[in-house]
Length: 352
Image (cartoon, rainbow, N blue to C red; front, side, top):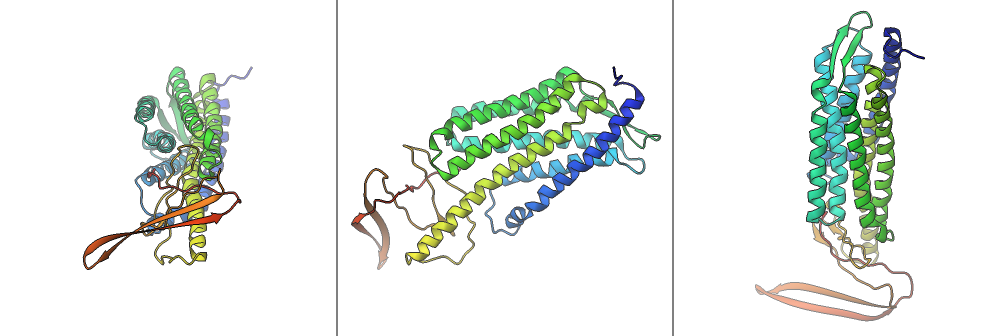
């Protein structure tokens, strides 16, 4: 039987933790560099700023701060301020985990079209997550060990609290997945709806698995090092999964907008020369239809609606003009087109 509280065993665990933190640092930095193009589009204004992007950035920055604090702590070459490093790692861990969940909360709320009941339920659960994570700060203590050249973990949160925090996080992710899946399951024919469903399930699987590992380690409670060894792993996986979901919605809309612009160009419609990435995806789920509003420079290019159960296509266009300062309205209708090929529906929707 291994004595996990033996100083020699704890030293070995610390060395493993140090090597593991270096691997996770490489993964986190690789993810940031690989997706730097998206951040650069936001900074340069090519992609219109939306306030959820702030949460996206907070999650990524907290991931880097947490993994850097752990890596410096475990691989220090000289004495480091252990108290400050410990607080930074705990604070960034809590902020990063909550930000990852908030990204999915906002996406689920948008899928439900800001339904008040869903908003209140998810809001209360999110506040509960913040409250539980904030309780873990006061228990984490570390002190510099000159012999081992690292910050020794003196204490962590009690076993019951650690297990409760990570179990709550997993349950919260499960509730988000259920809400999102229930809403999107009947709209899988939609490209964007199918994307959200796929990414939501993918996020849950990765986040649930990583948090499950940390929950098991906290429940076993072998020693202070083993209690938190999977902590950076859970954060890195959760942040990468959540931010990938966030980016995929925008890139999916970019592809849709690009295809629509090409179709407009082929039909002789005027094309804008301004920035392409101006609006986010706009979807509306009603009567098994998918909604998009394609716009360039905030001006709708057009709205067309066809029903898949009939062969005839009816196009209606309303144009407001002004003659000698007096607004006029002209209407034109075109009928008689017969197309038996597969069709899809576009309608104006509400912004996410």
